[in-house]
Image (cartoon, rainbow, N blue to C red; front, side, top):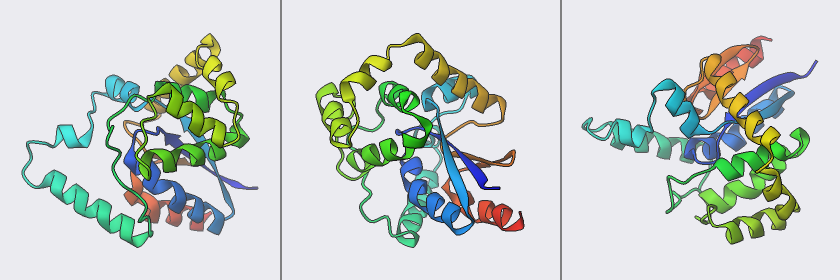
Length: 200
């Protein structure tokens, strides 16, 4: 039976971009599949009392500098040299996540891979409707239909349910990964995830 790795995901997290390919490489190594659960990070923070690290740790001498050091080490280790901080960060991803929720599960990876380079390599403003439409359409998706879906009550509720369910299971940030009920937070947990996959 194929092992499943669940990734709680939001486009706004640079760490979600950074873990995306390494996590898929790890999944391929162990014959596992990655299933994406869209969840609005802002909603998770509201429910848990969490805050973005760059804001939360702003007054802690050296902590954000160290976080950047670790990020650069991760980038070098996994050869993610195209990454650059988006000049529009932080940005609202409700529309993107509703679109992702509306996309069929088997097409979600492709949708994410259409948007991640635009956001975290090209630095585009995905809160601009015209820019977003061009990116989505260029990836082979019907941008107009997906944008219409973002206003559907069922899609809105599905995203809310995802957020509440993830928090109920212990998630408080992005990226959160579940493997057989075990929770892992952050891109730095790849080694622990591999240990669990290897033991199965």
